Image 1: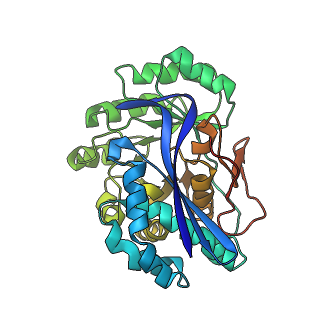
Image 2 (image 1 turned 45 degrees about the horizontal axis):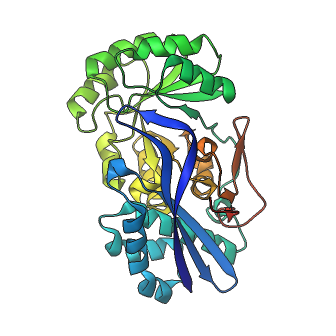
Length: 339
């Protein structure tokens, strides 16, 4: 068995702004895991907001090489459990390794992941395309440059409803709104009434992540569904969201990979919560992993690779709002270049 890590800076097509940050480049870590004739690839974007760096992720992954080598013939779920003690403070690094292990496992079994899990590619949700914060003119230009049936609009200003009104003049596409913790409960309830008339589908994380008192009020009074993002990081958070949100948004990097994500999906459904899986700004390596969960999801946000100036991989692709799977095993991802 051989493991290598690659720390890369992925250049974005446009500056990406949300309510608390802005960036032009997305650092990411690629894990390459070889065993016999097969190679698996995993990825996790290094997000400064969560205190992650590619250097630290690489260090954490490399620490598990001895125990990984001893257990490489086991299932991804077994390997995740065995290596979990090494990743107590770094779910991002754990995610990159878990995806690589899954990819390798699928290749050794000569099957794509969704088939290993007993799933079929039917009734798949459409992914949104994200429009980051900017001037109205900039946001309209992004929509014009990238026609899409469903947009996620990043908000968090004093003029949020007006921004959506202006954007609505330029497209008939459905909208989703992500306030990134910037609103109060009262604002959310008021804004929801106005945004529903503008064909907004749901509101993602409108309140600060720990404001469950406010979310209880929003849950009862909002005319639009509310989706937990920052309030639902790990498995232990799923149950906390029941009765406060209508759905949860799972990020593979935050929870530690595909293995815990599948458990979170099952628990959420048992609690009557709908499920969304979101992305950071990964290349097609990370996006391809998300795609195999699609048959289990109500919503998905897997546009990360579309936001890149230059992708580094081939694999599952989005085109005209639809997902296209390659005829390859594992996740279907294949590195093509480093830029």
